Image 1 (spheres, each protein chain N blue to C red):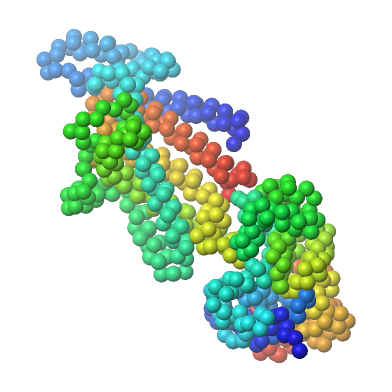
Image 2: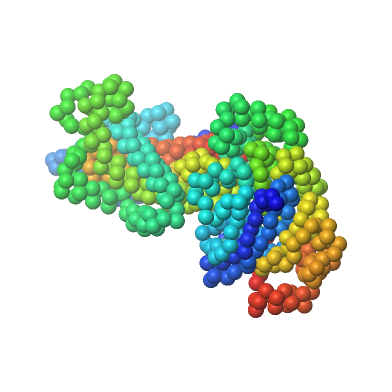
Length: 290
Length: 336
Ligand SMILES: Nc1ncnc2c1ncn2[C@@H]1O[C@H](COP(=O)(O)OP(=O)(O)OP(=O)(O)O)[C@@H](O)[C@H]1O
Ligand SMILES: [Mg+2]
């Protein structure tokens, strides 16, 4: 039996900011090489917390109280800082949510796109430039020389997200963590970006953790899905199975509510209150935390 | 800033200076005190006094006085100092370089010291050093320049006298200077003994003027850096393996300097005002020190000339700050 790329086992965490409230409750999931895994759930479900834990960037106010994250068998949570920073940015990279704030307004695109190549791979300026041109071609950016020379504010949101995707795949990582990478974009651009992430992921054989609110997006891009509520895994399985034959009443309610990727924030409201009552009873929380 | 913006600013600057000229002129005629009374000998007859008044044009009506003075100013003639009987422009030209050297030294000290401390504080986020630094800086923020000057006189002048207490240069050093920019000239001509002596004389007034600026730079810059450090682009750069120091200097700093730069400009103009009292305390022969003498002697032409000079410096500094801000920020606008 081959070992999975990522295995999260019984991960629990609390927020010291919110008086020790649980943020993750005994979360387990595995991720195979080259697989796209969706993390779905309403706001506050703990999706970003899992993503941050994978990247080793949990805020100081979130404390892990139990469990492991194994990356190729090695425990990320117990790893010395130096080893961790070897992995991060090279084997595990991030596509952030908001292309507005993810590029430094004061630096040219070339400098930002080649940081990783130069710092992690020790490429020369010229080598990094060649590689940057290739990468921009891969993410279908025309006149790459002009774009490399531009500042972020001279480019559109979609263009910037393409650059961030190119940057995330630049070092042929094994895992890309994408935290709601299309939420800040126009609908038409969203579709292109989704397709691009899928294409890049297939071409590089990279596994992706894809965080989203939106089951419509999940259906488009994910092989497997994990549905979370209040830090607890509610359902986990292959995308097609889960969308056609949901096992949990919350999953069915979400599918029925039909959130679409053209209105990402409008989706989860119509789930009946009775479903939430049952969820809370199952998890053992008194009040709905928003 | 485009060329037409710049022209606009310069035009406004001229208007502002005109306003300053009118206000100073009127104010000085309202406050009591007669320059002639300060210069006559006790044996002067009323006729002598009247002759003197006529000589300096003080017997004319106010609008007439202003008209004559203003036309002269336009021609670059600021009149003759009543107390020193010398050309006002010449006097200012002799003293201004000393003040400029002092003010720029204090500016450089304040910005560099403040910048270094803000950077260290940002690197030390989430350690015990950070709140300690904020506390100490809070104290520094509350101490104005003249209090620093007096404290420094006590500390570095009386208890631990390492630096000369007064003046600009040791008068026994027989150095001949071609310009009034002693510090720059001694550096250019590689006259290090004079340079060292000038610096030693400058240390205390420079600290008095520069420490409040440093405290303000620390607070503003640290706040802006903290804001920038939590941006996603800093996170991404950190993941790519950028060192903490480079994260602060390369990623955060350029996006954080905007507010600090603006405030430094404002603070620098205050500091030029502060040179008046600080130069006095250290008997530093600058424009500010001369301003106090001019006021004591009711030397109207000299006061007018000095105030206009200060006004012109304020305006130039403000334009310069905007130019630098525009250059630092490729978006063409300063963001907070
Ligand atoms: N910096 C933090 N310190 C302490 N607790 C936090 C912090 N950030 C988030 N939390 C808590 O962790 C819980 C999960 O937050 P998380 O950001 O993982 O949710 P999410 O599923 O990503 O939500 P969203 O869809 O809004 O991004 C929330 O209850 C939140 O209050
Ligand atoms: Mg989130």
